[in-house]
Structure formats: C-alpha cells, structure tokens
Image (tube, rainbow, N blue to C red; front, top):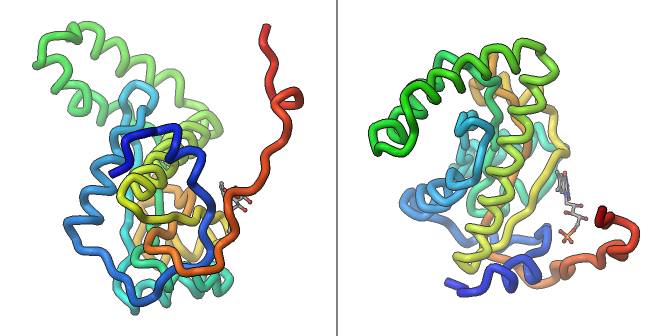
Length: 204
Ligand SMILES: Cc1cc2nc3c(=O)[nH]c(=O)nc-3n(C[C@H](O)[C@H](O)[C@H](O)COP(=O)(O)O)c2cc1C
C-alpha cells in the first residue's frame, strides 16, 4: 500500500491497456468495494450498488454494450457503479448504527428522513443525488485500486438502457459509470496535463 494520498492522486491515470491474464479474487473485489463505500453521501444515504463484472462471459456481454471497449473485458473486473434514487423510507436503517452508537440523536435521524422525503420529491433532484453518490463511490473505488497497486479506467461510453436491462438493475437504479480495474499493461498514457489553476480556481 502507498502511504501518501497525494502520491496516489498524482500518479493515477485513466488506464486503457490492461493485463488480460490478471484476475482478482472475490476477497480483493470485496475489499475494493468496502473502501469505495467509505465515500460520503448526502444524509449518509449510501444510495449506490456496485456490480462487479468479472466472469469472461459477463465481461464480453458488458463490452458489447460499451461500444466494444476492449478494457471492459481485458481488465480483471469492470464495475457497473449504480446510483439509486434516494428513498426516505430506507434511511432509518442506514442511520440507526449512528443513533445506536450514541452520537446521533434519534430525533435528528427522524428529521433527516423527513428532509430526504421533501428534498428529493422532484425527479431531477433525486436523479442528481444518485449520480452524485455513484460518482463519489466510483472515485473512491479508483483510489482504492491505486492504493492496491492496480489501475482504473472510468467510462461513460456505454448504452445505459441496455446495461440496466441486461444486468438486472431495479427501476430506481441508474448505471452511472463503468470502472475497469486491473493490472496495467505496458503502453498506457500517463495522467494528462491539467488546465492552469488560474482558469479553474476562484478564491473569494
Ligand atoms: C466520467 C468519465 C467518463 C469517461 N469515459 C471514458 C470512456 O468511455 N472511454 C474512455 O476511453 N475513457 C473515458 N474516460 C477517461 C477520460 O478520457 C480521462 O479521464 C481523461 O482524458 C483524463 O485522463 P487522465 O485521468 O489519465 O489524466 C472517462 C473519464 C471520466 C471521468
């Protein structure tokens, strides 16, 4: 494991070339996902699901819906990172460990449930939150991969409707991003140069 988060941020690149002979165990996939779920979500909704596509058959199927992108099947695993539309009814269970641990007052948990019910009544707001949560989960998953000496390739180049249908997503689940993870093959580009901070940073 690398000790420095800064190093991981600076060394990460979006991988396209993966060692197709490399595989990952259930344990390794579970550990990557455990770390990904340490990402924050609004109200601690944890409104996500991670589908780890690992078998050669499933990867080939997914690749077909991802415009043939070879990394989908060459990587040891390609995750379909799904965001879930926020459901206030599910929140009590998600918050109860914090209440039971004694630092979250029960009344606050009930208040958050009501906030979620009101806040996400509009479909666009609900969808935004699903995308936001899945994106933070995907980013954390990528850094968990880096920390394990692996590389990652995020993708939006896929047919979301087909992926949802073929991989059995529920009606409230949105396939937000594919993230290929595995061992790098030679020939990947390094992390690309970024825009100057003067263009993207405003300090007010
Ligand atoms: C949300 C998202 C979707 C992306 N989709 C694809 C994709 O479908 N195919 C692909 O080859 N690269 C994809 N990329 C990779 C980007 O092109 C890459 O992150 C960007 O060029 C910066 O490269 P770097 O991370 O190596 O610096 C995607 C990246 C992100 C963040």
